[in-house]
Length: 572
Image 1 (cartoon, one colour):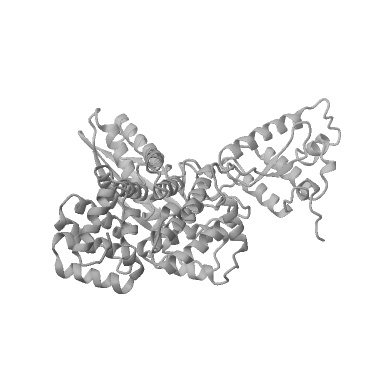
Image 2: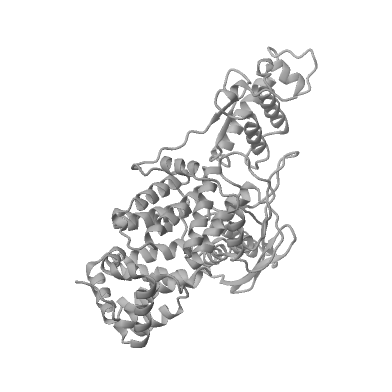
């Protein structure tokens, strides 16, 4: 027999199955701090309402059917139902303030009764959004035809990042249009191998510091315990970080390992030393924690590589959406236009399915910017794509103001709009939130450098390259420009020769300028011939392209002069 949909849900256009899925999510969340009785209370009133029996929900029926009171129960003399309802309302409020802050469906129990209400969370407005708004992007997504083979192509792209084969283990799919489940990492208590009061303090401090630094990355959930109330379930962590600390007279040694909880395989391990001097112990703990967090959680870190190596057939929606973000970083290695189109389509599908997924919106903004960066001729200042990217990025920031990837996208869009001061402020804000995010560090450094602040930007790019196992070509091309504008053409040539993106014309243009200015005639001639044969549109518009990408006129003119030395014909 097919159940009739509850009027309370139907009036708001909410399918009963989505409301049940939201109930399941609440009941299984570690942040829903409620007793077993309150769990039964919420389950009962929601199911009764969704089954069309909300009119019979009274204090008496709850006491008898949920709390096990006998038929003589008198709600006038026994306030148990009213008291438990108050506790349940507060538990729901706490849940929606913490783990449920991005859930699309709100379940509340209005005061004065016990019949639950179901509503969609109001979406935050996007400030200063022009015609090219998130709404218009969403409309375009809805109008886009569905590609049956999209996920197969996407997963093939992700597999290209694979470092090794692995078995798949993932949380059950989320059915509500909020945000997908993301990897959960349990930071266990570190073992104190010395057993003194001093070693116990250092051991506890290190574990807390590592957990704190890891939590700055918004694409993982950090846990320090999986204990729950009796009868209460929670999603298990996929990864576990454990460690041990050994204290010596003047130093301590931390050994950490990171493993896949499903099969116990060790994915990463390292050891760190620190001094125990009072003046430096806190700095040592913080520095070690930052290194651990960066190694594990950055864009090309251990977690990303482990998940990119998985070959998932028939992926659930959660995995498919999350894998879109992995495919973006795979694309960033090659900057291949075909891969860019596939990643864009994938991210559009992800935000359509999970409209509160801030990271997917942010990466969609990055891909939109790349359409301008790597199209020729390009004029970002007048391109509608830049305005569209800025609107998408700001929407991502609205969804999660502390999401560094979203702030990174907004920063980039502002720089490409030539709003350099505004972009710098957003970049500084993002770096203050998570100074361990090397993807942001390198991107911010590059934007600063190309805007003319070479002394500020180049050290950030260099540090990002040292700490990030990701796409070196991006960092090396910027470091080549740093050396070039610093007058060290031999070092610039060294960096650009390391850059392994043979099909990207911008890298060939940078190489031509470096080799032309440095007097490397054979190399300069090779780059000139490649550009004229493969990118005639870029060659015809070199002055526009250079002035678009280098903010200071003196930098642009010097670079154009170097291109002329390489044999490229550029009109004055």
